[in-house]
Image (tube, rainbow, N blue to C red; front, side, top):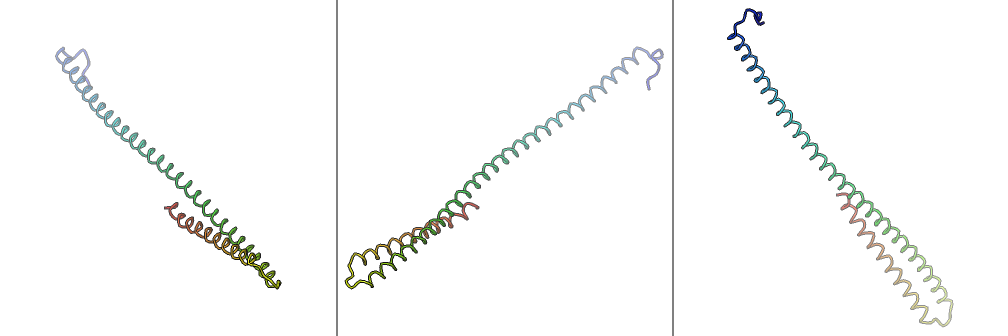
Length: 149
């Protein structure tokens, strides 16, 4: 509430203007401080958002790598199981050949060493195939927990 302008002297006007200028400067300083504080908070929030984005991107890359590794080892395990199944089929086929050769051997009056040698080869080949398939299956199974770690 200012007195009417006609009632004020020049000195009063100067004093009133100085007070208004001082109040405006004080308010401007407060607004400047508030602006600096808000700018600082905004910069900190942007920095945190960027760091979170970097961490999220890194986690996504790691997740994709783990997923690819898990798929790889699952495929390896599946391959090992298929090889083991094939080795088992081969072993059974070899055993069937062995049985046939054995029957033929016992049916002859004069067995030859070739039949016996062939039986031993078939047995050895079947045993080796089974051992290879089992070793591959064990290595694939042992690797599976590493893919999920």
